[in-house]
Amino acid sequence: MSPKSIFYIISIVSILTVPVFAQLGDRPVMVRMKGETVTAYQHSFALVVGVTNYQNGLPPLPGVSMDMARVKQSLENQGFKVILILDPTLEELDVAFSDFINRYGQDVETRLLFYFAGHGYTIKTKLGEELGYIVPVNAPNPARDPVAFQNMAMEMSQIDIYTKRIQAKHVLFLFDACFSGSLFTTGIGLPLPLNNKALLPVREFITSGTSDEQVPDKSIFCSQFLSGLEGEADIDKDGYVTGTELGTFLQYRVINYSYETQHPQFGKIRNPNLDKGDFIFVVPESGMEHPAADKKPVTKQVSVAPAVPEKTANVKETGDLKVFSAYTGDLYVDDVFFQTIVANATVLFFNIPVGKRKLQFYGPTIEKREVVVTKGQTCEVNYKKDQ
Image (cartoon, rainbow, N blue to C red; front, side, top):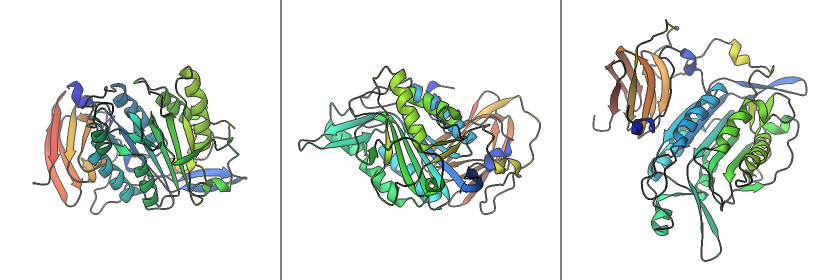
């Protein structure tokens, strides 16, 4: 497999026949508050975006692709269904955000998480304003062509527009990038014990640095984010990590481990209707309740979707499956739900058992086909508009 192929990893799947993926995103999250167990969320979805192969004068970030695989796995361990996109252009980034919000962000009893890793940049205007940007793969170097850069990068004000489209009560944006922005109020105080107020609507933001700082390719922010979800950010040791606890933890750890060259910022959106609650993660093996773990896995419901088969014997000889789709849809392999593929994304699945595999793609139409997976090789499949 060429190095370039690795940068297009959208999903890493251990073996074909593990049915647990069918329930990701649909596991209720239960928390204890004042001696009672309540349902915090019915659904959990995450959009994870990483940019590695910058094409137009900006330095590449080769560490991002592997960081994104680790973030994806950690979030799946938390019960999130994760859509992972690498190296998008501005147009592809906008489509990914819009499709994700339209598909998963319209149910109130949902938590949504957005994670971006790549270059960030701040432009200071002649009027004294600061405009923060996250940088897609094909944006030019802003120092060489600032006008073209502004046309090909995503201004942070666009994130504010996205937040208004979301109906989910809890949304957390994490940016492993440095830029200036005024979407949120920093310095939101010390974490408080979990209570009913945490379930109120909220939009929270955490960035890995300020406008005049640079994020290293070997991300301290990412490694500490993963440690935080494992329980290190559980400041009050109640079995939960809130968005406030996570922001506090990342601010302290990243400043310390970067020798004060990075200063993460965190806070809640400047909106009185969306700044009251707090995002909640359950610490693994904390002793808290995980009712979904005791229930029979529930298959994701798709029209005419096949049922998930029982787990079969381990398969040793495997190949890879690379899928491109011009449409958003759900991919099944041998009747096992693997991933929702966002329009114009390339997906690479590892460790697919060799031999004939049956593919079913539920997009605007239902497409069925058979492919042959060969040991150590990559089988490519395209779902294009002209087919």
